[in-house]
Length: 157
Image (tube, rainbow, N blue to C red):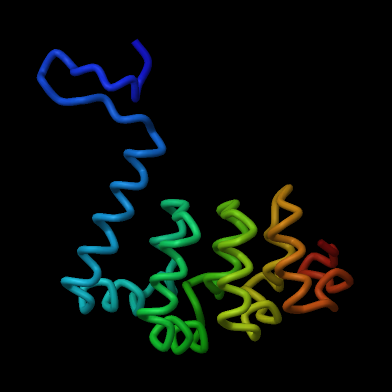
């Protein structure tokens, strides 16, 4: 039997397909954030930089939009500081982790200066994009000159 076919597992619970299970996880995540906003705020201000821990989970666009809407001021003020230990912003992280173009675009639009920020080895967020045309387009829209920019090793994106 396939996942999500509605049959009951031998323990009595129903199988959920991966998409529905992910949607329920993110729905619960946002409900918890609404109930305990200070908990998420503490993580956003953490030493690893804004939204870094969240982007590792590859959130869908609606979650990133909700976080930026609810905690945007905190995210932007954290981004104005040094970023994480390697100087990366949330935009660097979204590009490195292969987040969808919509997520990268939302983060770039929320903080246009992040597209121009270099990390500790001189890379712009565009240097971090891996085989994702939508993400590259979003970053280049925020910082058009990034396509010709060289990183600390002299490489262009």
